[in-house]
Length: 228
Image 1: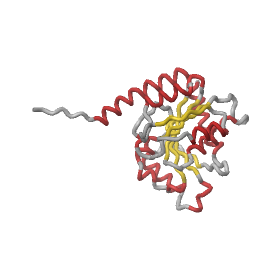
Image 2: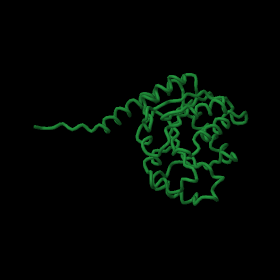
Image 3: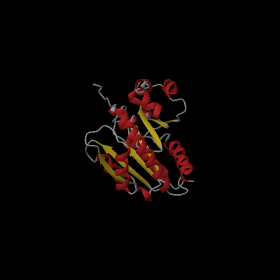
Image 4: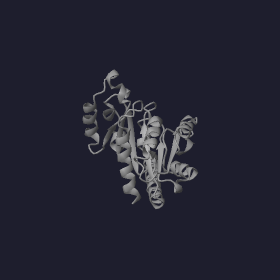
């Protein structure tokens, strides 16, 4: 008797990819730019989002003020959503994944519906903190931003190649601690180029603000191109 074998992971990913494409088209219709932010726990995602939102909304940079929302994804707690609400003017919502280590397109759709994306120019998703499974699932985002903190080391593109291969942009955070850790920027660039030579890299410090304005200006440029 022949036994039919179903590759569940492949089927799940293919179905999710279709949902993600539909979601991107819907967001294009409402002119909502969606950014999926991924990293390890403790890399500074929330801090980076706070400084980025503030930079985007500064009068000197905001020729047209952007309406921004943040979806905070986590297994539990609402700490990050409360931080965004307390420290910025962005709309925020907490997404609980029920133990799952990533978000997919349908979860994104639910969160976007709750945050009211139709009235927003830009929505950030702070994905669940890890460098493995979030890279496998398309959330329907227009941009994937990967954050790596200096304490994690400059070899991470070699250890987690899929995550860095998927990145549209890479942010290296906590550069004010560079001297305390064995992190070489040029070595990191070489390691990243081995898996993704086209991804732009921005070096940032949440403590000093270094690099934030440059990153925010670049992001604003990408948003303006999308909104045209």
